[in-house]
Length: 314
Image (cartoon, rainbow, N blue to C red):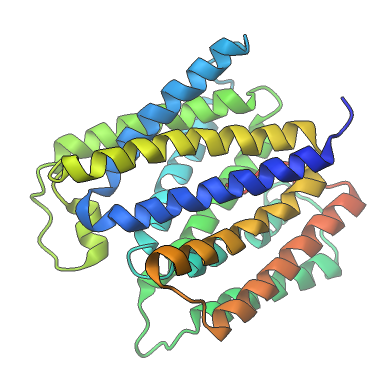
């Protein structure tokens, strides 16, 4: 099939805008809801929507995997990695958390060297260094008074990068929809376990926004939060369909660099909904991360080593 790059780029722009709205919704309701309560409702709704979509387009629904152990590791990394990202939204601006997540291409490159035995030349190493300088500039660590929760988006990037390396190993036999179903199923199971273990709010005894977001009693503000949780589920599935369709119909090396558009959407949403304006350090760090990331994409295309570019970053 001939690549339809213009349509793919448009879908990536739309998908990233939707993802940013999803993240903004998490940030808007975190003070009234439990993290894994949202995870459960969102995942159930997204799961139902994706199943219905596959039925409509007559695609097979396959839940089995050829790599059970790697699949469990991958979806666990993905689940707790993005839990960390949503936790970060309780303590930092939306654009800052999003920018720090984009350390993932640099971590993927490093993991590919040691795990996949890929060859990476000095120019890509320079891009990795530039990217991490961008992360350092944004974090601006003062180690005498440093909030280590600021590293939660970087932890998300770490978990995401490892999961992408595993997908590189498993995609020869497990298709993308099967791998998404594996995540949905595990997310639902873990969330239900968390409900029975801590859903009554018995561990919610620390006066900190991140702790309360994790341990708050479930369904305590359902009249307010339910519409937003349903909204997150619907747009989460919509974003998935937009992004993966973009990668299917267009060149991954082309559309992947446009995922950085989410930094624009995150900045706009942060400004519109939370009165958050990125400071100079955040803007400089974003520029360094974008430059380093796009250069990695370019070099992967030139060297025909599509490690970062063949799968979406969100």
